[in-house]
Length: 176
Image 1 (cartoon, one colour):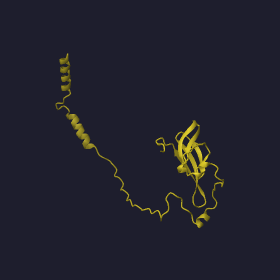
Image 2 (cartoon, one colour):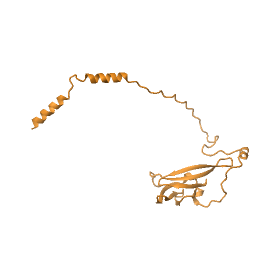
Image 3 (cartoon, one colour):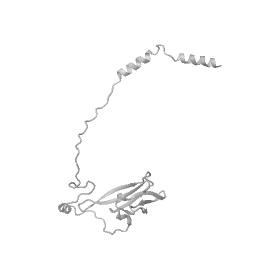
Image 4 (tube, helix red, strand yellow):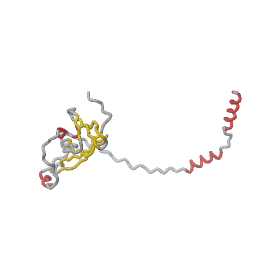
């Protein structure tokens, strides 16, 4: 039985051998390579990079809004101003960047966000609650994000609206 299988295998393998009968295939391949044209658009020239050194004592901080001169303050007088209510929530005394979104509790559509303050206390935050020292109001809470609308001073006596999202970071390690 073993001899029959070996003979059949040998016949099958010899049937697959080429004895010069693939000339038409080789001609097709050569013709296709010859007629192929590369049509790539050239890359635009690379822009020249000029580094600008930053001197912290002389230049202004790039992350702080510039203060306005007295003339500029007089130009914009008729604009929206936030109410001057005193702080009533402990989370209003912290920078929004120092607060951490830790998770949510509740059912879909009625979530409460869990926010950690810099002093490691966890606060339950609902819609409409004010966070951060720029009067950021919570607009929406989902399983992975907390959407907040902040009001920032523009340095000219007016206030600008900024939308911020705090994302849930599942890869955080506990503080040690």
